[in-house]
Length: 494
Image (cartoon, rainbow, N blue to C red):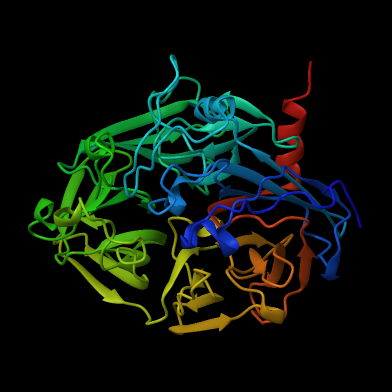
């Protein structure tokens, strides 16, 4: 193996804190790395060619309030694992936002936390008023590698060098921010996404060929919901109105900005359906006080809209505890798989649990977005160990109503969100691979595991040994060889 990772390079800084989100697989990693011809146990499938891009939450400087620091607040660092001809290479780079440059210039953290509150430093003249951590999702679109964060504009990176090129606004189509979650229409390739600013949710559609926004519609939902994800069917964009809120006014006071306020939804959770073609909006009462975290998918069948995702009993500091906020794990209990149904003739909504296996970061074969799917993939959160968050990789079969769970080989743990990659000339929904990043406690490095999605077993097809530990992050996506090469070519000088 040949790589440029220097011997003795720093990994985790010795910050004196017991905060789980600054230790173990969450601990920051100081170096930007390049590595080639990585060591592989097993064999990378010959038809797996492209790159897995992931973004991690990786604080560059010691947080101003280490006791209140939350995982959601780490600086964005993008890594790419490039696969081709059975070999692997690796690269990681910071997302150089304007707010990061301010802190680099100061040599310390300036901005305070927005989740649990904290004390801010003195902002230099001309500095952005709020921090764009650029740490939530990353994917290839419009020949750019785009990094998303819900509190500001996305940034775009060179897909090969990972150099930060600046903010990205869909050629003037958005002005302030957009969600970190997007869906790709499997028929057109267009990107569907939204922006949540206070109580207003604006839905967007961006053209796959030009990157320009070609449709949008705003809906006032009346509550500043912490809206992280949405679902999409053939007809609808689907949003949940829950007691989980993001309160920018409280952030400005140094108080917790992620709050749980059941008084804002006195009749319980509501589902908002936006007809993607006519912009007609309908409201559907589910009842109960809960929050959704992430969705698998949604589709229409026999007069029903079916929505699959994860459901959590609470999310955020209760409004009565703002001066003495709960610890993050107190307000973020394990989520469970649920199914919601809406009768499209009567408007009646209902919900039902799918399984009792706690988990997060659900994904499907993205070619089935908005269509009926049989399989859903996620990582389990059964144990909530002292130093990890996730503990297994799972596949749920909605036809047979069974869940298969595998744990990591040789003690590997804390797997990342699974990304499905179809085999070349795939003929079935499950005909492909699952790509996940796991933490090796023994080496304190990460490994890319490649599993057969149709035959999920503990021992993967391949273990790619990475030269660094990727701090545990949120989301990522695959770019196949053709799309990646086209994007790289688009960035070459004329």
